[in-house]
Structure formats: C-alpha cells, structure tokens
Length: 267
Image (cartoon, one colour):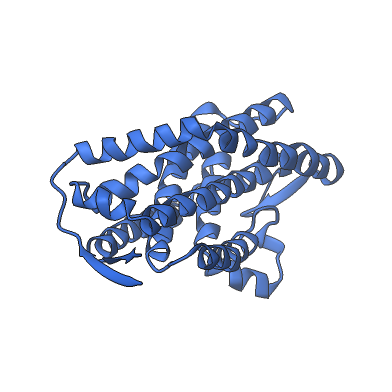
C-alpha cells in the first residue's frame, strides 16, 4: 500500500464555499433524519425524570450566592449535554471526510478552511437548537420562567460554544487515521470534559478538588456564562474569555487545516 501526499492550495470559491458545505450538510441531515430524531429522547428524559424529579425533591440550588430554580439550573446543563452529543456526530463526519479524501477534494475545489469549519458546524447547530427549543418548551410548560430575550441570548451564545468545540475537534480529527482512534479519543476526551463540568451541581459548595478540575475545563466557563444570561447575573469577564477562546481556536483550526498534508491510501 502506497501513500500519496496531497498539498492543499488556498481555495478560490470565496463565500460560495461556505454555502457549498452548508448545502452538503443539509443534504446529509435530510438523509439521516433518524439521527436528528433519536437525539431528542435523551434531553427530554433527563429533563423530565432527572431535573424535574430533583426540583420536586430538593427545590433550589445556589448560583453565585443566589438561590435559583434547580429546574432552570439543570436545563442549562442539559443544553451542554446536547451540544456534546452533536459533537460526536460532527467528529464522525470530519473523520469520514478526511479518511475518504472528501475533505481534500473540497479544499482543492476552492473551499477555504475557515468556511469548511463553519459549514461543518451546520449539522450540530441544527441538532442542538432543535433539542434546546424542545427542552425550553418543556421547562415553560412545567412552570419555569426565563424571559424569551434571555433565552435568545443563550441560543446565540450556544453557537459560539459550538464553533469552539468544532474547531478544537477539527484539530483533533486531523490527527485521527481510523475509526478505532476516533472512538478511543472521543471516549477518553469528551466524557471526562463533560462530567468534570458543573452540569447538575453548583461550584459554590463543591469540594476543592472538583472546583480545581472544573476551573481548567472550558465547558465550565461556557456553562457559567449561559447561566449568567439566564439568571441575569452575567460575568462579563467570563463571557469575553469564552468568546476570545472560541475566536482563537477557530483561527488555530483554520491554520492547521490550511497547512495539513493529506495522506491518501492507494491500493
């Protein structure tokens, strides 16, 4: 088996490149509707049987010195879980594109690396938004109250979070050569990041080791910002930090993608 290196030159499609990738992602979404529908069950079950059950038993939870509804607090955690679930599907598509030479073909045909990253985010954005809307509707029907304007702010911020994680996982996907590596990396990286963040517990009263681990986790700051928007106790420094990290990771992933030598197997 020989390996041939493909050197990618800058694309020339301009803004049309992002629409080409988005169009491909929408076609993939249309042909894989069952993936989208199956993703709705997990957040709904978590909300109805976990969040609502604990809210009924224990009531409120402390957030930055203020008591807030556990129902609303955990709802933001479920949003993060939905985001990470969609990241698995996103990495699958990235690795498939890279493994079968589709990624190199897209770049060779004029798609700029930043536009590829934005375009490949279409699938997780649609999946996350649909799940978040349904959970928020259930939250409202269960008596929860978060103003629509704040909820829209959370949706906008979720897109920033998606860009961060898609960019980070793009860098990781470039290092993955087969599906076994993909599954190993996803399980050893994503699950610890997810569980080390305060999805359903408050850092205010958490043990020291848990606070230390959480503070080096980007997801923690994303959750803190979304909850700050929801409860109107916004930490602007935290919000700016998350936005800067997303921008820096997006630029870094674009550079990595531009300078990658793609190896294609020739049988």
